[in-house]
Length: 281
Image (cartoon, rainbow, N blue to C red; front, side, top):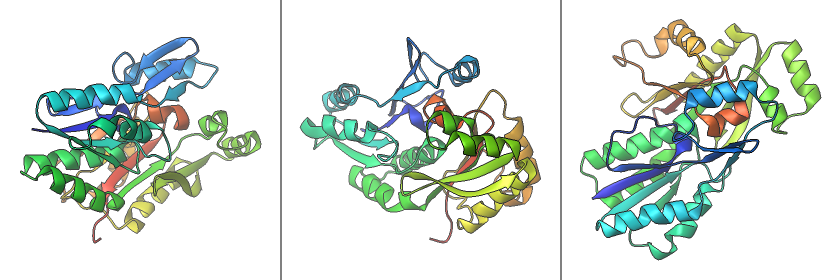
């Protein structure tokens, strides 16, 4: 049997598959430590985030958690494809490799070079390949080849959490707030980059849609997701309605997901994003 192992930064909740293992990232609020998606739901995270004066701290999945998962796979006589949060954003990929030392014939570790719904798209792709009968080696090789086609583009509501995390200066955050600046960001080669800045939500939504088209358009044969941070998906639903032309006639329904604490810590509530495999590559 082939298992897929990933971390909770992939924001997969309500897992119903026996062949998918999700290892939780730890999130600490002050003296309280939680397991992302286990003892801390996405809703609980944002309720705490709004109330907290200090930014929570996230920590990578430790090697022993991966080792326990690998041992389970080996004991069952199976193999595992391991898909982690980008190695440029977290040490989880390194943890997965450290633990793999004694299990080289059992596991293959893949750096998603992505996060949240972008990482989730790669996990879902792996599961589809497995369900279609692909072998262990075929799944691994296909993921390594096609992961570069994944685009994750997001519109942030505020610069406040980037400021709290030390990613931008206080002056830049204040100026952005006064001007209602909405940055559009992306994950490129495993790192977060700013693609553009818009003044107000309407311009931001237009810029997000423009970046999706510039990203090669969506390959609707592959997994794609829309995500949101915070307690409400109202902004995402408005974006979906305003940009109906992007998906109308291509899909019967849209998969939406809440973004949990691992990524939400750094971008805050009110963000929306799209993750997809670029078409025509």
